[in-house]
Image (cartoon, rainbow, N blue to C red):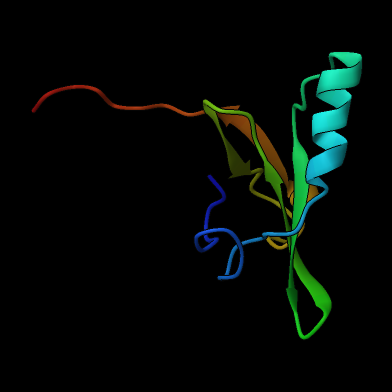
Length: 85
């Protein structure tokens, strides 16, 4: 799932990334991706990047730096509240 991305592409979220490089690295070298950088473009210019994190993790802003730059985000474990209220 790509946050902010419509069915396959488009929307306000970053939807451009090198899918094949991640797949090739995993299949051919056994290296699972720990983070994939995706970008969003407006009028042909990249205006936002974000990390795509492995299942079970989410991208969290580190609290400093530009929120449009993936370098200012970390992939962290997603905390799910399963408490019945």
